[in-house]
Image: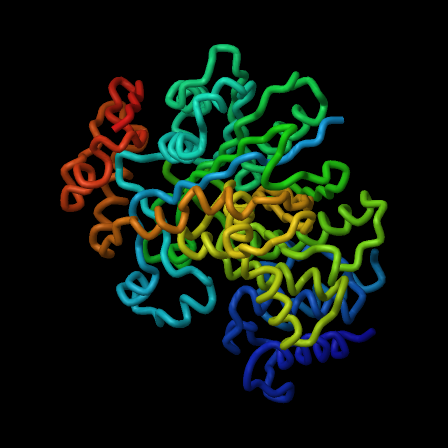
Length: 82
Length: 409
């Protein structure tokens, strides 16, 4: 799986969970908070993305990640690990 | 093994409150958004003559008869707001409620899991038969520290809660063989000094979801039943650092075990989770008393609740540990909880202004680690005289050379 595919999964889950946001308008260099996400929205996006990507890592390790691109990097490191 | 469960329950939601709408306005936030996100309407607020000891004692005194006191053989108090690092507050509470000299007592600590740690020990003691017919009094009592102008300020609160645990339960019987625990070593929220309550809320929210997933999966592994998430549990009592988090907790378990579209999820949440939020919405953060508050809420909210109704509980303590366990409702449970008049007591709290709340918290802070002080009972428009004097409620009278004196008002 490529990083771009991971970014696309995250973007899809952001669009699914936040109101009035289109996938094509999401900039990966930004934080989800820039799009109005609160802490619980972010947890949901992270959880759904991990499920879609079949990744299991402690969510607590993801809490301080700054932007969507960095979240994708963290997911990429853990693809295939169980 | 003995049967074991809860014979009595009571909550003490302090004597004052702060309206979260008033706080939102004072802090320049949208009151409706605050109410929607956190699902809190008011938070409990202690006057300076109350603390974790008084709340715990007042919760217990509100439900115990003289016979109950004779029947108690163990007292365990869970708290993250103790007033001493060595002497457990169970000793203060033991004497204040008048228990006998042979009642073993101690304090448990594990952030918001402290109440369930206390409960677990009591349940095991009664189930084992080593109780020799005696009952256990389990108390969870906690109160927030000062968080002016921080995001966390909207998820503060306090409450004391008490369970009488026995082999003749009348409210809920625990399914002792069904329990799942999950733990990890992290710093999410913690209290490194007598003043600070610090940490990273994002990490705590994320860890909470790891814990609900991990403990529920272990609950399934320890359970010989085939569990259909949609039908096995009639209600869920999720830990409530703030009631709004329970939606995410339920969504997390649903995603793994019974996927639902948003409208279905909302319906399921309204039906099986919202009844557990009745009192948490009024006291705010429940800390270690959270599951106690949730159980009382379900039983109060459902007058027609049937014998055998299964309730799933999730307890979470920062640090961190999550536990999922279950119990079944016993006949007459609603009436027993209703008789405690918890709603009426919360209705009778004094609604403080934001200025009064700030003055109270600022004064309380000057008392912490102060070897000598007498709580000022002249404040708040004579609230002590109106509500406490002659009531029998336990209050802190004075601290002299660090010795704390509690009395019945």
